[in-house]
Length: 354
Image (cartoon, rainbow, N blue to C red; front, side, top):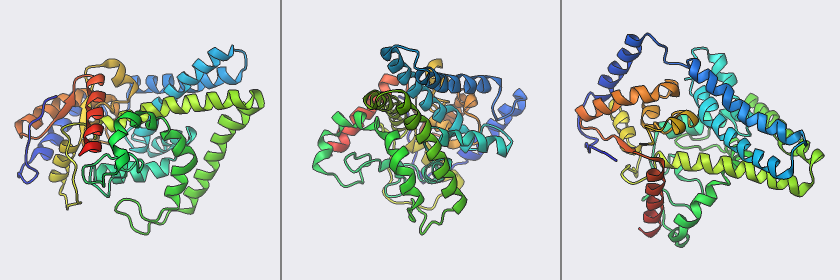
């Protein structure tokens, strides 16, 4: 990992310089900042992996062990939809057409989540207040996991580096059955106080949840015994949950990233430097991880340019690292996936023992 430390008080035109360089890149290449043919092909492939696996399972033509393996690939596909389809769509990065982005964003609902809830908790709160204690809700995934040095330390946190990775596997089950409902009835979310949610969004969440429960619970129970369904349902959720949970944690809760105790007023320039201080990349040279994760291993670029499609992050990462070095701004990264996981493990152990 390389890193150049710069004080947040340093006056710099880093962000304005960076935006000019990135804009110049797209202009010189004559390409759009949105999805290209490669992104569309990837979208089709991931949707096919997810729902092709589902179709094979409910066809009831496979041996049980093979149907169980399809549950694993279904979980991989569902996580991929979250990474590469829903994420870009909800950020408005996939297409220049708002309707297309909205429809693709609804794929989050199709896999059991909520486009609306995600747009608030992730797009607005997390991206605006990254790693700020008491505001960034991504740091408060569970009371038994401590992800900030400013959180209260409890005795159970001493062991969190042993059980946290297993706990991540239950993330999507929590989202599907509890989190979205909780957020829809929660008036205080991050910096929002007495937040009023549109009635239409309540209706959309309810209808899409019913559809999700129908095709993942009701239909399989008409085909398989209850215990066979339970094993399959838990398998694909655990696979999707642990992939999503680990990936998002490796972006911000690793060694070297900063954690802020209180929210401070940020200008665009200081906000950009804040993102550089609190965010980390990993496995940037891996075509496999980059393809599958929708560029989320280029989390630095994503936080700085969330409305640029993830398919372009590998290219603009060279620009970001170059401009960051010129302005002596931090650029955190881990060369490989195992190194990033190892750093998160060490971070968990440190937060539990501090």
